[in-house]
Image 1 (cartoon, rainbow, N blue to C red):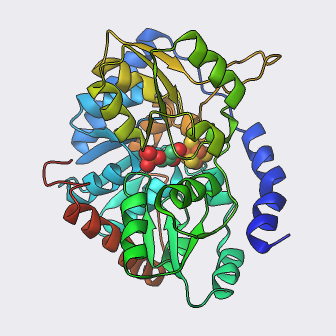
Image 2 (tube, helix red, strand yellow):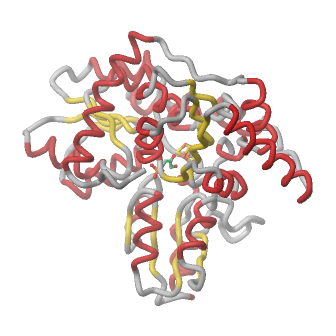
Length: 358
Ligand code: 13P
Ligand code: SF4
């Protein structure tokens, strides 16, 4: 087994163990929620802070980000918004790599997260020492990494991409005649290889959420709703992606589902996205793509355990106490900033990000 396969394989049981030990979200009644929301709103003002949330966090956190002048979006846009916003403190509700990306771009700002335990299986499955060793095996290759990685892995890369811009960036590198190493998501890497004809060498990491989407159950659902549009996040397995009418990042899925005439949308991504999607298209029928086989008790359980660790309670405590600040080593940050800025500049040049974004 190669390094690219054996390391993620070896780390799988550790990742499973972390997931099993995720603490359950505290239950709050409506009055308690309203109380937390009022206190958080006041603290945001008092501390000159802004809330930036990913589409996968709980609905109430997304709603609060919007009602307090913050932002809800995909990972590319979140990073961009934080860097451009005037607030001195960025409070990132998402997973750790998102907070770290904000800190790389805005070292002068305080970046807080409701919990620093919110990881990502892609990041966990791609440790810097082994990934660097893998890269060293191909010295004539350009190293392209997904944003779902640690600061150290980003610092080892020539390019960083997100699922919003990965295909365009790889096409650009192919046009320059480059040979490419890709990490860490094997499904996104394979999707890009199929789409662009690139022959990237792939690290074999995976997203524990999207990896669960099931082909046969999706086909059965498509038979039941033959007019439905199927929208799939590219971290999903190749066979599931092959069934999609549209493949894209979270933000792109919302835009494509909204623009389409289809009245039924089957969506293969974390169910947190349904909050924003149902606001955009309140009259469409939204159906989560299945993650469970015939005998499973949960037919669609696509929810990131780490995103779910962000709650009103730990958000309030973080803001109140100023805890859970993201810190990154300055030399590593400066190295990681180079491929990150390369990605942002490219995204602006190609119109993937516009001045109107964020
Ligand atoms: P997006 O860049 O599409 O928001 O995806 C981030 C992510 O972690 C998806 O699982
Ligand atoms: Fe990582 Fe998957 Fe969670 Fe996204 S959904 S943060 S890729 S584990």
